[in-house]
Amino acid sequence: MTTAEQVSNQPAAATVATPAIAVENIVKRYGAFEAVKGVTFEVADGEIFGLLGPNGAGKSTLIRMMTTLIPVTSGRALIAGHDVVHEPDAVRRLIGVIPQALTSDIDLTVEENLSIYAKLYGVPRVQREQNIARLLEAVDLTKWREAQTKTLSGGMRRRLEIARGLVHNPRIFFLDEPTTGLDPVSRVAVWEMLDKLRTSMKLTILITTHYMDEADNLCDRIAIIDHGKLVALDTPLALKSSVPGSSVIEVQFGKNHVDRKSQLEQLAGVTGVESRGSGEYRLMTSNGSLTTTQLVEMATTEGTPIHGLSVQNTTLDDVFVYYTGRQLRDEQVKALSFVMPPRPGMQP
Ligand SMILES: Nc1ncnc2c1ncn2[C@@H]1O[C@H](COP(=O)(O)OP(=O)(O)OP(=O)(O)O)[C@@H](O)[C@H]1O
Ligand SMILES: [Mg+2]
Image 1: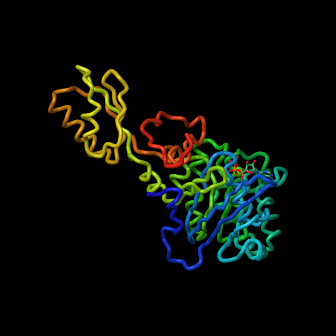
Image 2: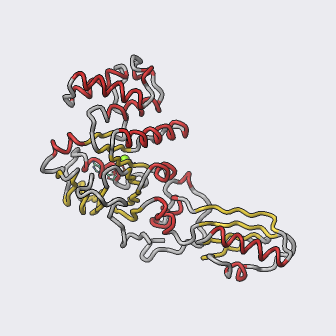
Image 3: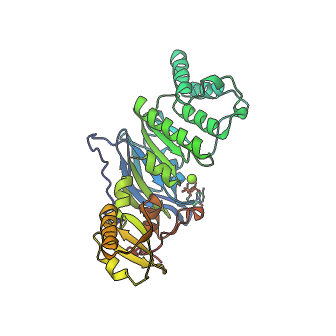
């Protein structure tokens, strides 16, 4: 099980001696305020690694330290073995960074934005032209290369910034909330693009987000950050399995509404039952299909009709609630607060 105490810091594919990113007990203090409180993790070569957390969790602060943009208070961060404090130039050559705010120049064309950046990095002309052509194709902006950046939609501008961050062929790509504010279709387009770029450019990607579906779809592993601390780290699947009960079953019985709570608690896999009145129950289970089968068999044997039945798998939202005791976002509030046993030491 993944808990704050048992955080697995070993990448899934531990075949590479030097991790792409190694962060060791890193701390950032602004005066008396500790924004990052001793975080440790490693990212393997080729991984897509997500930092997931609510506003103010410390995601951008972590990225800024890893990318040499702000001083580290204590602890250390190594990028492909290079210390961000002692070898910042070596680190900068290896990384591409997309900051949280849009930073492309709206008065330049798409191509000019890319070209200026490539020149800043000293990419030779022939290489520059090849890279720009290939990246424009990869982010689907080839036909917009002459367009002024101010005429692009939000999604297109994000794609331009992704291309710009890659124009010097970095090995490790940091993206701070690259899809915030985009519509769902544009967000999915960005995920697909990042996944393809990871393969074609052999990139390691570290991405921050507060979108659960994004982290779930895109990331090989996810670190959940809350109040400057790492509270869980694992694959999306393992994180979801670490929440007691991997599915929620809702059932509505017809006919005589006798109390079935204790009967339902006996079904295989059930970790909790909530009676909602009028023959309706919610069951938490570690084995959704087995519990559902037994539930239907029970009702059939008794001759009790089932008027409604739904089975829903645990989502990363449930994971976040479990580890932090809070919803990630107010608008993502859903009815899953029942029978969530508190973690030891978790604040109510
Ligand atoms: N320069 C600064 N001086 C003082 N406090 C800061 C500074 N930068 C960030 N903070 C504080 O550090 C904490 C972490 O901020 P950070 O920007 O890293 O959060 P975040 O996880 O990126 O949030 P968001 O999702 O809103 O981008 C916040 O409480 C923030 O107010
Ligand atoms: Mg941020």
